[in-house]
Image 1 (cartoon, helix red, strand yellow):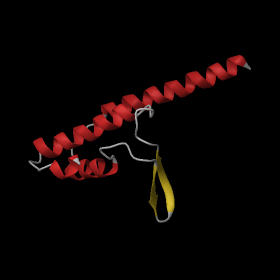
Image 2 (cartoon, one colour):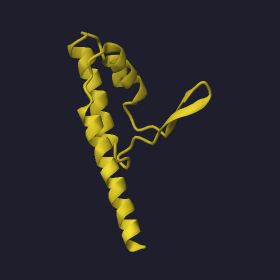
Image 3 (cartoon, helix red, strand yellow):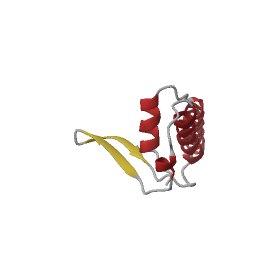
Image 4 (spheres, helix red, strand yellow):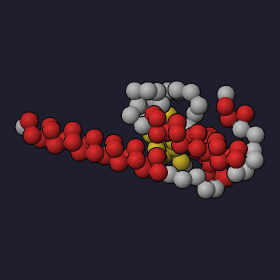
Length: 98
């Protein structure tokens, strides 16, 4: 039983590491996607959210505070989207910074 628990911990940490790397490697290339990212990922730590499409939950976002293991990656993705909008698109991003 002990090896089963160790295997599950290893698999979940491997999956978490994969997700962290995948988010870190995402590249912002389109203005519309950058806007979606900035709108979806809030600047401050909110409560958990559910994204619904046609009344069905398609994505559950856990609270984005430092307890979330993906917090740093999501904040980095949001920052890269803001930088893309400011640098590549010449947009004023101050409305997104509150």
